[in-house]
Amino acid sequence: MGERLEDVRRLFFNWEVMTATFPELLREGLPNTLMVSFGAISIGIVFGMLVALMGISHRWYLKVPAKVYIDIFRGLPAVLTIVLVGLGLPAAGIRPWGREARIAAAVALGAIATAYIAEIFRAGIQSIDKGQMEASRSVGMTYLQAMWLVIIPQAVRRVFPPLTNEAIAIIKDSSLIFVIGLSIGQRDLFRVGQNIAQQSGNYSAVTAAALYYLAITIPLTYLVNWLDTRLREGPKEALPADDLPATAEPGR
Image (cartoon, rainbow, N blue to C red; front, side):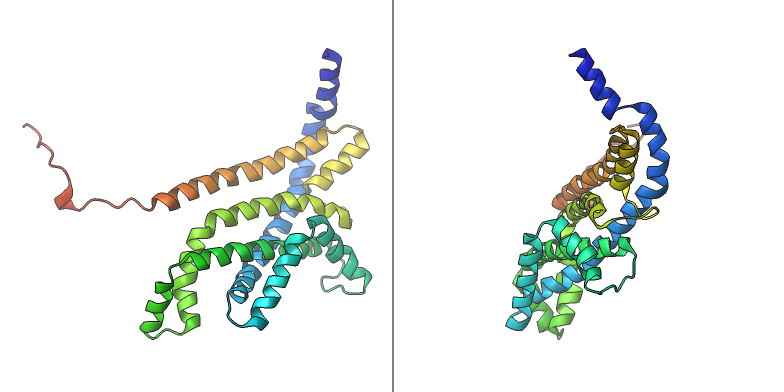
């Protein structure tokens, strides 16, 4: 039993291998992971809002394409979407991002994120009382003005925690982009750890990459919990002066 534990420690928690891996993870893996992840999140938020608005439209030619898009990209495995965008499109001669694999990865993950974020926005918008729209229209706002100035700001406030959860999921899914082939300088955290593990025959490099993912996702998880608590409780307003309890003056 002791020998097996030692083998596990040597293969997965070898401190020498991990410390040798940390600098390369920090220099190459972390910036690429963050670039791809936040690129995908930005795409997801912008197009997710657009798809959400299409999905709640009363016009069928807007609603149906939005529904089809959401069903497809929520139903496909993430790795399959990444392969289709990162390898399939270039094979068909479609290279809008040239040979930059990181952009292809961000687009693929952004397409997936769009579907999930669209559903988050849709639920948030539909949770706002219909009287808000009616009141906005009654004071002369157009439908778009009321949606943009009144409904959407309230909806975003309500869905901020699930949006942050989706951001965490995207960061974790970014570890799948290795399937499209990443050259030196483009590798994400997982790919750097995997390459070093293959060269050294020791999986401690992958463990080191895992620690970087945890360093990103765990603080975000606590941020989500804190935001959720704050949004549920609402701001604590100070009591008016007249409502404050009387206090004894000094010397009395």
